[in-house]
Length: 145
Image 1 (spheres, helix red, strand yellow):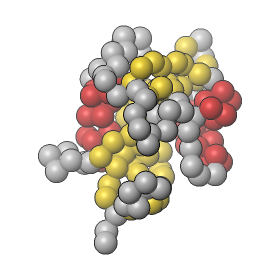
Image 2: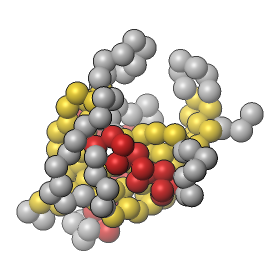
Image 3: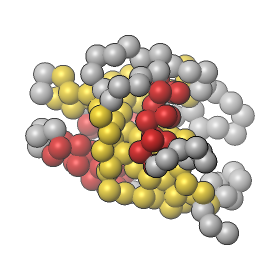
């Protein structure tokens, strides 16, 4: 069976020449991890591309429409530990400015973190070096490295 496509989005901003990364706290639900995480979501049939799916998820989950998007050059394959369904997450970075964040019902809070805190606390089932590589792409793009 072919894996289903999803998107994985690291939302960030640059303040005082420093990178800040958005961590979301999910609304507690049975069988759901409650650790901080990034925006993720499915790719719908009406999404014209993975980029469009990522931007749609940003709008749905934090209420922001105008932002810059970039590919983080990773697609992560995994099997959901609860449903055993296979997925491929296409990874993106989305830069926002000072727009207010309006959370949907999936989240109870958010916080902006520096790179080290983000890497240490974000829920991630894989080798964190992959997450570090994606953040390095953002830093390079923003001339922060």
